[in-house]
Length: 160
Length: 281
Image (cartoon, rainbow over all chains, first blue to last red; front, side):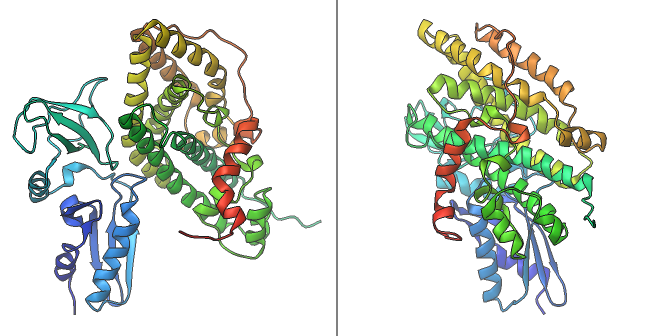
């Protein structure tokens, strides 16, 4: 009989389709796994309300669990408490940086004032002499930065 | 004559949820019209991101609204809307979902405010509309986080984190344009003055607003009106702009009476589902 630990192990192979270096466990979107006699229930929480990756993630969870021989799988969406980058694993942050995306650098509950921006170190050269070029990037979870020392543009996973 | 009694509270909850959902969808759709037309790439991407947040929020809200509709007795379900395409589905006994509410309702079943359906016009007009609406949305959601309805509170909590970015974006643009060149200053002031007459309706309570407030579900609109005025004033002050003077305020959208712009917007947004029912891609 499959147990919760086996399921978590299987979920570690499901990646975020938009940031494939992160698993859904690294991202912190799996809130609960419960195994019942005839059914497995996975509770996930969306990163952003309009994130198109969420439907793909739910489908991939189903595919992986089906391949483990499970037949009755329910995926529940939970909105509250709202997802935060505070739930991202340290391992996940390291993987992001190695991939070239600057990870979130602070707790998400401090709001920035107008025209304020996070001083994000460049993931390529480590310089803190960087500037934000846009608070919005190719996906809802990222903003755009530029390093003023090595001159490389890079993405920052927003503190959310 | 035997009539079926509609549970008035649930009926008002449905209208309340649709008012909010329709604001999110229509505002999101309007902003998405900038996709591929932004003045610079970063701003094009910014507006597409913001549009997606609104449409995502609308999806959660329509899912809730659809579940409320589906819980009514079938006889009542057939009387909830005045849209032929949606009623055809309901009269077959089918359950409805978020897509049906977005794509199968006609303009006279939409409850969004007139403000969000106004055309993008130029950059200043888009920024002015967003600034008024984002500021409203920020206080609206802040208040709804403590709603006694747990689904509404959860959607508000989730959405507020995203609306923080929207409000920063539009406030910064107000300041950048207002405190920019003579040309940008004049054009944003004109846009703010022009759009002002659509802001009164945001705080005009409907029957649904009043019913939901009395149950601890909704928002005290007179309280957030003051917060809204204070915030608008502070940002305009920093932007060296002046508060528009009081004018006669437009209203009707929340009561399903819309400007001509909504019809054109829906014609484009709903075309595929109307022309090819149930199509998927």
